[in-house]
Image (tube, rainbow, N blue to C red; front, side, top):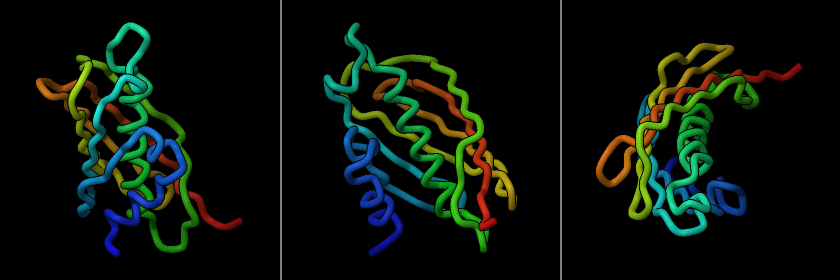
Length: 134
């Protein structure tokens, strides 16, 4: 089984699986994912819920961190995240491209762009703290 299949299996029964997030590519320094929109992922006003966008971007960056952990580390935790929303969507598929900006021994910084059917929806950045045994 390949890394993409492993990452998709990792989300089963957790938030990524519940919302239908799918990892489509894992490469050196990047993760690509997508999410088919449905009514449950929209806000009460009928537009894409901000939390849906953040879940897609944060999961993509988190999975990227996971596959790029330094030797000897045991995991990671998010210490900061930021989103700039530029647009919205109501239907169709949204995509995320996450890119490693900094891959240090104690922190990783990831940027992600979330695209909708017609435009860029959000720019996202997160910082992850790499964890080691005590």
